[in-house]
Image (cartoon, rainbow, N blue to C red; front, side, top):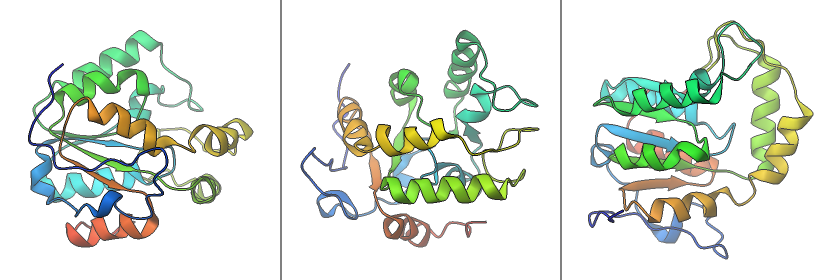
Length: 205
């Protein structure tokens, strides 16, 4: 797979403590990410809310992969893998989209179609706090919520947040280097707030 020469993003290494934007890279203009934007990051990093804000700003449909992966009207019951993969591939082959979610096994074909990427990560304490706050609030109208589902605290989910997402910024950097897409990364709450201000996005609800 060929690399795209127009990429402008800088990527963190395993030893780099990216407190804000990596290597002092500026926030790219939103329009430079094109009209097929993939938003990657661990659970509870703020992907869904950002996807809605970017969608409203650009007039591009937002797609939440959690909604495709789970059956509506259930307590987050996964679809059969083949059915989910088919829904994912149908979504990415549309001409304009903002798709949020990771699902690592499907990232390569998503990035092959994407024109730009936003990566959001955070420390596991903040992710855990956001997960508990979101789950206890159980707001059916929140961005990315599954129709008919009820959020509940899961020890399995907390374990995932604490142990499986610690080096997520490094994981995403490695896969992104293969595609050379224009990329904006943020690894703190302050950096995420900077994105909203710089791009003049609708206020988070």
